[in-house]
Length: 79
Ligand SMILES: [Zn+2]
Image (cartoon, rainbow, N blue to C red):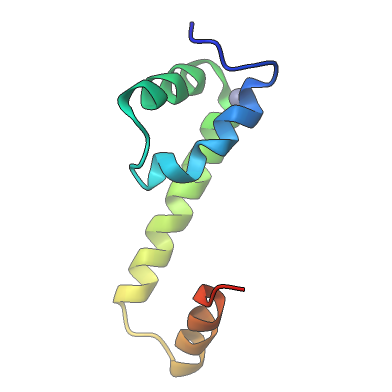
């Protein structure tokens, strides 16, 4: 088992976004996947985030009312 520090779930959460963005190194993927294998909590979190992303992607492709598009555009604007 790869060492993930005192709080593997926190580390796992840190890797969630880069994991879904496919920005992790092979080693990091292995670490994340090993943890997901044994941690139902993080597995659920990853699944949820993945589903959310798929939904958002789909919503962007499909026709949206202009006011919703505007709302999403506003969300994307960096603070
Ligand atoms: Zn966990």
